[in-house]
Length: 160
Image 1 (spheres, rainbow, N blue to C red):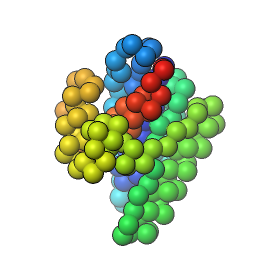
Image 2: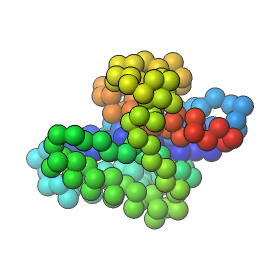
Image 3: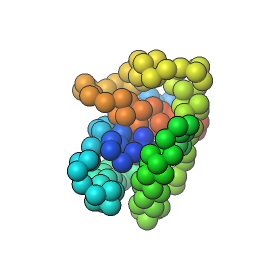
Image 4: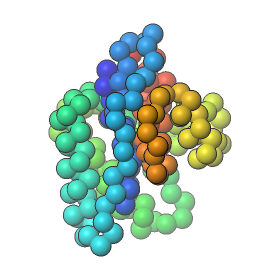
């Protein structure tokens, strides 16, 4: 089964395509990236770009599932609202393409990947690299976060 997993945002969006044949197989990373939008662009154009990129990947890889991180913001409400809009658009595109949508909290992701709910970013990245083969260096942790979201989906659905 192929899934698309996303660490949502509007400035940077971590995205990964993972596949797992059955419960006895290991997950395979087919694709990962961190899309960046131009801060000089309007918010609407930034959303459009993200949507177009996700649509292209759905058409190319034909995943059946969208796994996406739930938002957790405790300080900047404006950023939270903008990221929520981006996340809503991403979920809409997934549903338009008949993907099932699964959301995971940062706590669930940390537990699934590291076994400890208070892990920091570095620990999540380190364990993500140990759990799945990543054939390229990544510049931003958003990409690792997206891969971790995908690993969380498979950890929570072990019969796949």
